[in-house]
Length: 157
Image (cartoon, rainbow, N blue to C red; front, side, top):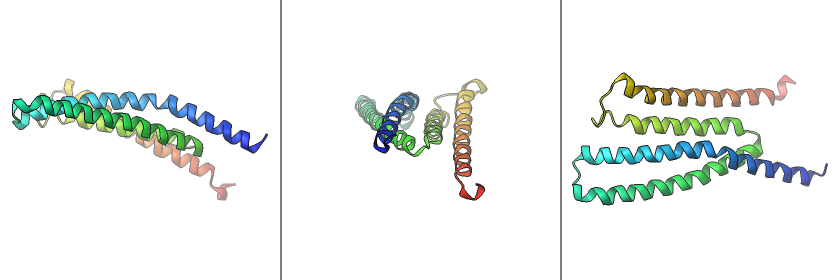
């Protein structure tokens, strides 16, 4: 097969996979955006900010988080595309999901020190599960990277 054709097929499949796989991290990032909006509202109440300023602060936070989400989706797609070309797609997607789940757990855990929510087993369980899933996903990405490195090690051949 022609090397140029093979390279173009690889790029096309990497592009398709990156756009397909960016859906899961972008949905997690959307949940993070909504959780951060709630955290801003809680911080406004707990921080004693004037109620006259709330609407403006919430609007700017909504727009700022929205722009950050949009930029994040394009950045994640680019990272996934580059990883697919290098053959490292599995550990990169696991790293992205772990990062977003960790941030989501942190954005939800901020409610407890601010006094917006009572710390009960039922309310803490989702936060703990998100943090545990983030740790497991990150460990999975490290294991995938180590296995790939062991397979490509020329000393073992």
